[in-house]
Length: 284
Image (cartoon, rainbow, N blue to C red; front, side):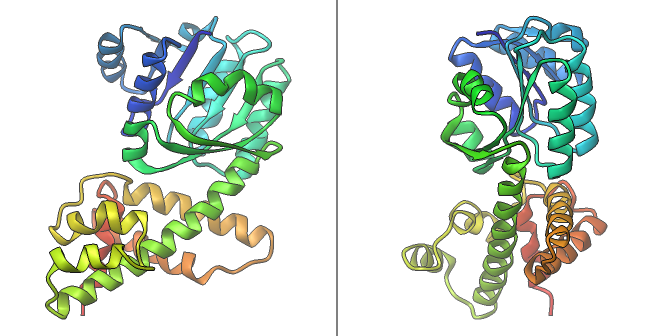
């Protein structure tokens, strides 16, 4: 198998590294050519200077930011990949974007999987991500060796779009947990509780969760290095709200989180970790 990887940010770079460790990675690409060349040199693969650099790949994985970025990359891959190849999109985008990408590539005989991930930067670095996949089963089987390089769990959710639908549900839970944890820890600070005692006590009971475990100590120390950026979660929550509106649901927890993260972005915290939410919760 010959695999390519496009999008070498905080998640994509370690994911590509795991694929290289399996001996499957041939070429990488990134908006910043310098970053692509640096990682390619470290991994011993090629750095593409254009879409043509991915010609001959059996599987190309994407890990980019926006719906428009995904469609741009899909259009580019449609012009260079051979029939039978598969594009796997690990970005978080709308269900409609996933289905548009699938239809575009299907016209060229190329498979497409919408396969967003959850597990944070830690999961990407450790190769322990949860991958939620929409698309044809045969395309998943072809791409599986690549996904297995960085996944703790791969779940085929159904047809095209179901991966992104599952990620929308995931982000509803993420948003609600972030709100609760930040409010709780802000209260703990006001009450003068010792964080070295508070955090392990909370983690040992029903309040334990990933966000508290991975971000509790750092947010109390006012360290907000991403991680997952506030601006990216705000983008995701807007996607979620649109999906929910389409099925006639109002999600008040998502509305609250969207408003809070919009405030953080307006205050210049778009690049900060999502745990920066505690700054709002500390306000009187």
